[in-house]
Image (cartoon, rainbow, N blue to C red):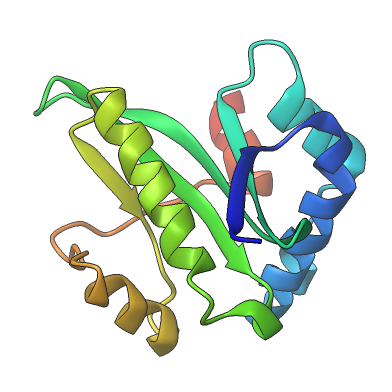
Length: 159
């Protein structure tokens, strides 16, 4: 049976959380996973959500996932597709699942008229960097990402 990519559904929330945790362990950041099944259900499947998920299956078994959302480029005057997470189980890496998920998302971006398809990768993740560059993606180094989170976000918002 070939690879199958399908939209994630609410019943996939526990599976997605497991994949998120596995990805966080790989990225040495398991302690940063703060969500639970209810959080996944609310953020990916509630009415009005802006994030979307995909499940990749091989022989009917889930082997990976992707989470994405649409952003916007004022310079292009177009939406973009931002890939938040891409994960394939270690034992299934090399079967083409990651490439299939990326191609699925690229097709979605083109169909939606997006001007960009972007994602981030940890600077030490050489296998992922090599993989992304093998499909023609190029690193962006003109910008430095910033983040407000936790207490810093709350304190700044409070004034």
